[in-house]
Length: 130
Image 1 (cartoon, rainbow, N blue to C red):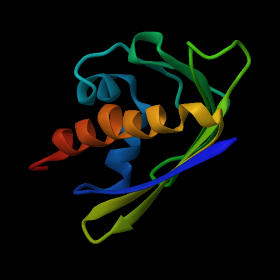
Image 2 (cartoon, one colour):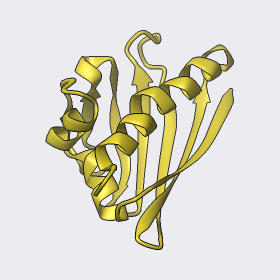
Image 3 (cartoon, one colour):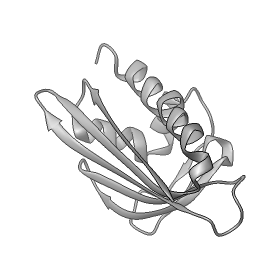
Image 4 (cartoon, rainbow, N blue to C red):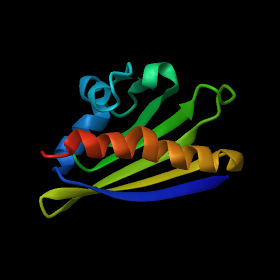
């Protein structure tokens, strides 16, 4: 199994980043209107990007950490990876640290590019000028 580690900086507070990642209306806004269903509690289910990504929240600590059992629906049934997002206050902004693990090795390049294209670039645009 493989893993991905990425770090980005965003110009807003950890609470605002956490809300964008855990509240359906905000998630849909930064992803360009793609449907999202999110239960932001530990154990809560989520369905992102119109159902392309599904899973459950393992741990939700508002403004600090989000840990998810996460899978694209194209993967075999019952195959999940682990996504851990840490949010750290940095000046007036946030350092976001992603650790994504336990996915098939052949998916590493696709997933790594997907985090940048589907999450980090849209989040940066969403918060630009905030």
